[in-house]
Image (cartoon, rainbow, N blue to C red):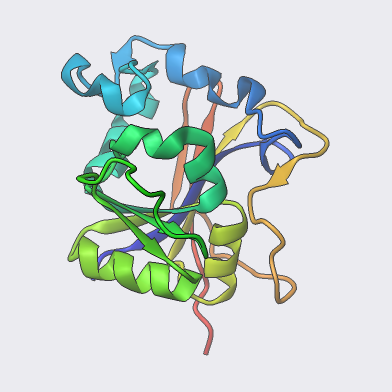
Length: 203
């Protein structure tokens, strides 16, 4: 079974979006370099852009996207992006955690599955991923998965901006303090710091 990691780009004070779901400058680093993350033939999965980042960010992000076979998201992100029009942004499958079913008639051939709970969503993602990695989007769904002990690593791309308020990376994390191991990845990009922390296993 592959690794399951929590991931998002976040402000220095830990927000993945403002109160109105705007990301402001959080994604500016995706276009401040000379190295394309995806070729032009696959840019439709990323809003029509191939992204151009620094060499350090390109090596890190390409590796992450290559290994990731399933992406787990919440219904809010699905609705905001319309599921990227049925094209997973960096995986073979997407699992949407939602009490509402797949919208009627929505891209019937898209590799998207819907699950009614976080536990069900992660179990389905593990089935679909095989030996590949699972990315879980940070926020409420990701925070619940972390609280339930379903996350192996926390991957966060820190951007040097302070939001002050907004949508927190860990959502409304239940269960009090959670201590992580020292980061095993620390990569400085241009306008972003890539960090990856193993989750300290209980027991």
